[in-house]
Structure formats: structure tokens, C-alpha cells
Length: 217
Image (cartoon, rainbow, N blue to C red; front, side):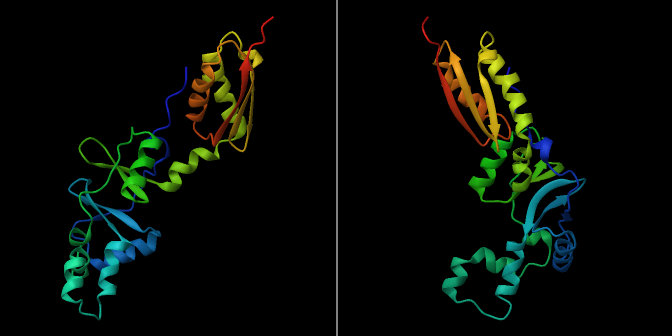
């Protein structure tokens, strides 16, 4: 039976650099510089995520440092101009925070990042308490799996599952994450199913099916 996909909890970083709502502007900048991060969750109470403050939220203060925007620009960039006058994380942060749960799949987290155009997501539990953080780099960790490990999982969870009587006749080759399936099978309608299941194996880059119907004797 195919395995459960890896979850966010499998790859997230549990030690998270964060700030409180009342953290002043310069403390935010110093913390980002010290820990080499470009964004941080903003927390309230015992660790509930209420927003995220990023470098993009801080830049308007420098951009409008020595200029007075025109009325047209003020209307067009109302949010940025407001952040130029902000002095605490609570005033600077983007809210509500875009978050993900630890039991979300890596594919779900990747879709959220792509759609919302963010590079990292705070990981929260059902009541919004911070559990960790997941980044684009974390989601790519699955592609560090060795070809041997991928081959073993494909044989065990896909080939043996779909073709229990013919698994010995199906060859699985993996090179740089690309899986090639070779051999003869009775039911060619299962080829598309096999491709879909293999593609779902963590770390697989592509699938090359070279399966044919069993020759008629």
C-alpha cells in the first residue's frame, strides 16, 4: 500500500525566531540581522501567531525617509505609507498571518506558498499556537533522498502493491530522482495508475514508464 506523503511536521524547523507585538522597529531589524532571517512571526500571549513582519514591511520607512509622496501616490500606496510611520511589530506586521498546520502535506504547503507568494509559513496548531516554521528550502529537502531509497520505496509501495503476481518481472531504475519502470504486465490500464503513484513518492523528479502488455502465448 502506498505510504502516507510526508507532512510539514517532518521537515519544519522547530526553533523559530519571533518577536512580540510591542517589539520596536530597531529591535526587529537587529533580530533579523542577528539570525539572518528576512521575516518573523509576531506572537501574542503564550505564543499565538497574530501576524508576520518581513523586510518588505520595514523598507517603506527608508523609502519615504526623505520624501513627501504626492496625493496620487498616497492613495495608491496607502498601506506602505502607513508602515513608513510604524514603530512596532504590531503596526508593521502583515495580518492575518498566512499559516499552515503541521499535518498538511508538503504539496499543500507548496501550493499555499505559490498562491500567496510567500517564502515561508509559520506552522500553527488548531488554536494558532506556533509550532515551527517551514520554508521553500524545507519543502525541497525530500529531493535529497538517495536513488536507492526511492527505488526501494517504489518497489515496496507501488510495484508490489499494483502487480503482486508480476513484481519480479518489473524492473525499477532510478537515476537522479527519475524513475524508469520496465517490464510486461497483464493490465495496461494500470500503467497510468502506476505513474501517478510513483510520482507521489517523495523525492521523485519524473517517471518514465516503459511498461507493455504481456505477450500473448
